[in-house]
Figure 1 (cartoon, rainbow, N blue to C red):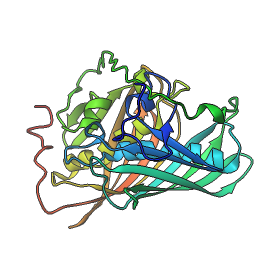
Figure 2 (tube, rainbow, N blue to C red; figure 1 turned 45 degrees about the vertical axis):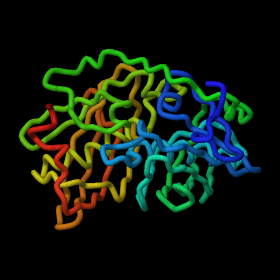
Figure 3 (tube, rainbow, N blue to C red; figure 1 turned 180 degrees about the horizontal axis):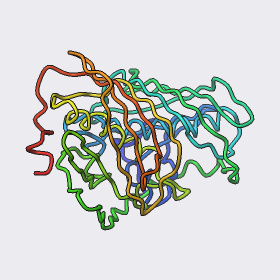
Figure 4 (cartoon, one colour; figure 1 turned 90 degrees about the horizontal axis):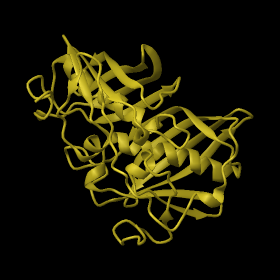
Length: 309
């Protein structure tokens, strides 16, 4: 795509260079703007980024925040050595509606020899949407060239999908929403009140290093915390995420089967506190905890009768 449409662009923003066929190219178009040492990532929220309620999916917002943290921190530090997210904490302040302009900024709290502590604020149409803090680890990979971050063409979407080849007992799940359709197919396994989400990691789920993108893992973890807790509590009312925190303890790679398990800590009339672990071959790769708000109306899109329909 040679031209940047008015719908996808804001003044001064240019296409963020993303490797073809990988996460950022498949779920964009991500844009960027550099003003001195301030790097802003931008995205026009489209149907393909939304959940069943026509608002930006939490997984998409966290993937955006993860990239804003890393690239924004590099520019603030004027140090373009590779950074890897090891912890991210998110407070969801307001939803991002389809058509809105999502934008981020990053500040540095502290930088040490091995770690960078940073914060990011995301806005939708100028109003605060997410408050994010992260811990980034310096990696010994060769430094990146900041001149290659922004380009003139939007990365094309390959649309390539492989065979998910799920393990025995996993079946395709039926959860509508443009972002889950794009990142899926998600599969599920139900044993009593324990529901496990699973995803076969493909190239399109990975970053430029060939490892599973943090946004992919956060999406699966977010689903485990929300819908996963519905089965644990037999309460299928809509539970939007208010707070999410994760520790990335290991890597998932192309070809891996990523899956999760959820435990409920406490359920009140208005709030749900839960935690989840994501695994590859029985080894933990992410630990996450969340606080979900329980709304008053039933969310009939997810239930034991519809999840595998």
